[in-house]
View 1 (cartoon, one colour):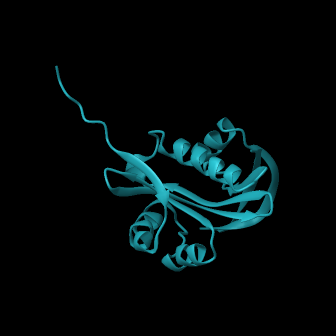
View 2 (tube, helix red, strand yellow):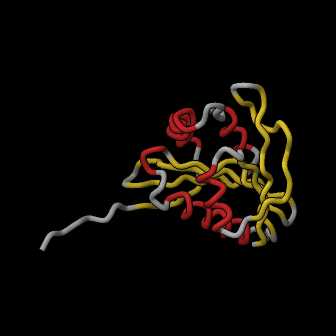
Length: 153
């Protein structure tokens, strides 16, 4: 019999000590990444910031802003080597739970139309397209639209 150790994963609130790890991941997965300052400002503003760890290593993170009974997912990311393995789905489900626990009735997010993997994930988790935000994201040839999506919590 072979013993296979299952990796230990955990979700926990982001701390200032996580900013370096998060800031190392962000530019490896986005052409226009958030800065360390963006994450620090989110922590200081009291946004719901979480990290996803695998065997003690930060492999993902999410930042959510609460406004009255709405949760707005500002950033949700999984490091490239761990994408496509269910960690993003798990992190999104967790953030939806966090939103519910803080009284949110709905969650909203923006996503690039070119990010087909994210669109499929969001749709599979109950998000629906609500609107298009024209020229929302920077892009190599100018600006890219954003799909505004929402889900009832």
